[in-house]
Length: 235
Image (cartoon, helix red, strand yellow):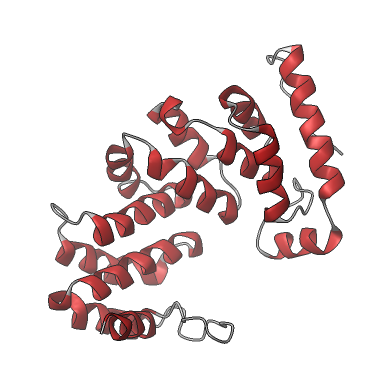
């Protein structure tokens, strides 16, 4: 059933949010719900396919305040929708930090990173703060932004130190953090020949995602395979 909303919201906003939650609930299906639960989504979700959420976002269009209210429901699909409706530049660093740390499902983290955080004017300050955090979702976002910097704007990054930290921490890191740490490792190996052998060696040593199942035609996330394949393509 649609989630109960905080009483601090206006009656107009409550009606809009409740209406959207009702639509999301109607779009849900049991198979998707079970898939989400296997991936750690919990019970506060309807099992709506991502494409349906995108369609709904297009029909609603950007609405910053509505997006913030949707986020506060805690519902997985409402939060995914919120990432498509919010205005990134209108969020304070404190608001974004709160949002990141409140995430319980990696799909929400990835959409927030892709559609909101990476468009925020203070993303470098946020990156630095999150890289020093002990919160798994904050660290996931910090490493995601670091991987982006490695690939697009590496000036000022100490790549050797990043590799040292990855080698030291990734093996015992929370699984939600390992994914974006591994991305940073791969990006260093792909884009920086002088660090490639070290990146490959770290990947082999840690063995993370070595046996990760991949569909035919897709590249393994195991860093040595990923690095070598991308370098081959650059050719």
